[in-house]
Length: 434
Image (cartoon, rainbow, N blue to C red; front, side, top):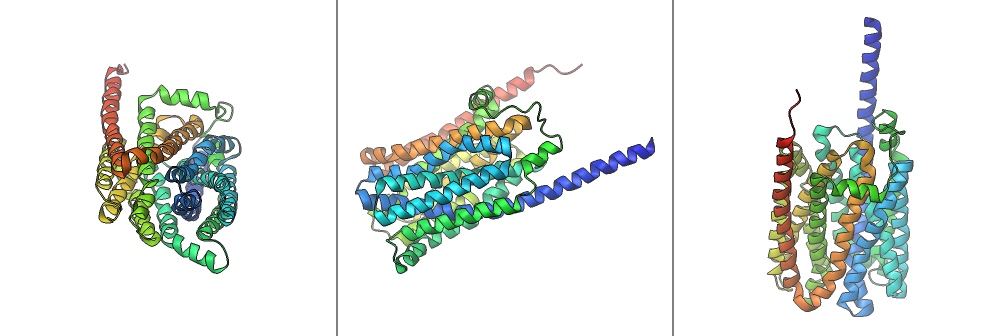
């Protein structure tokens, strides 16, 4: 009997060792793919509103074009989740990055032909690459131990610091290089985006082996017989019926809405103050640093202190950042730089803590569909914020829109308090086992 016990123990140890090795490879691979995709994302984002305004002369249409990045990401979030649920993380991420590549290539053509409809179509495709980038944080959590899940998610979020900062800083240089080889202004940024999304696809295809989700199933963490299809209606019902899940998705929505609501207007606001694309790029870098640079610390704090304290901080930072930006004239720099830094930091707190709370709320066989619906809600709300911000900007101005964003951030604080009280009361009402 002892012999069989020793053999069984050795088998378990080997499985745990193999699982840890696969998780290390998964995290390292996703760090590199996320960094590459981050360059593609930001290189697209910075120039879209400015190019659309050059083409159409309309601020409203400029913000609509910029919002296509979020619309494309929102529309593809759940379809990508369905692919991952059926074929694994690698297939879904690869497909998303390849569509991002195609979209950025179409946007390059739009810059050459100065076609606004073609620009919107291309940016929609690039948005699918953004959805793939966001999905990597969940791919990293498939094999992560529960006690370090938030830190694992935050490490993937952090890796975007590299790509997004590079994208922010070299976007103007990419446009200059493009012009030097005969491309129109800003077309070089889209060409850079296409190349980097393609690099991300290649990294995932060659290095994300074995697939973390399929490996988790092979270990019995997912029961294929019991695993439901990724159905949007059922996944939404699961979220709506659970207070913690509602808060998790609500926190991601608030974080995304305030971030997009401010960022979709800030380049135009600064441009009207005759600030250069280089200065606008550095403002974006500050914003990106807020979003990603401190994420490992935020993930560690979330694992140690819990999600609720982090969500209080997220609401406070979104409120403070939007309020500071609201008070800054279009010729100012400190207010928009630091306001957008704080908004980015609030986004990081909200997305890391919210994602961790959402993952931990459901058993693993339900998570893929729930994750897809959660990202659909988050990015879709951000897309609506981007679309509506141009119209609101016309009537309320930059300060007025950001005052509204600050108030929206405060709702997260109230929602966190309410949910905490509901969950605590429910736990208190559960009878103790005999």
